Image: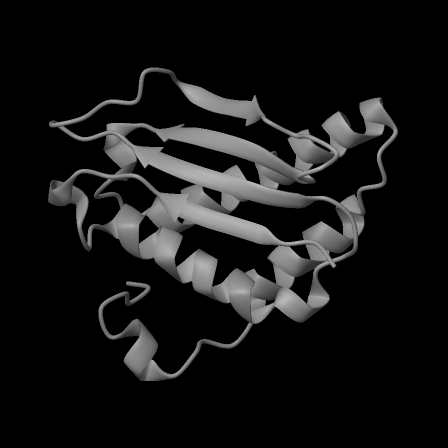
Length: 144
């Protein structure tokens, strides 16, 4: 079975911001779908939201770091500052993950490494549509 790791590197001013909450919600939803992860390489996604105090040193998405002895494809995503406090933060995070899956699918296809893109898309879809965890887990991360 593969794995997915989600992290966020943010300034203190983004603590509990809409982007922080969105990334936390999606990471928790994906963790609940762990049993559905298809076999094959894993994914690691580091979200880097811009703020007044800190800016990533790139724009868009970077990919790399895959090795056969550590079968995890790594991504870094620079999040524009306008999404930090946007009501679209959750939609943005989900769209980024769709792009991650597409890029991973292309990468592994080019290298002829088995990667079940459809299976990963099902996991993301299930995480998006799955039931919420207990209220206590979301008290600080409401959708609205």
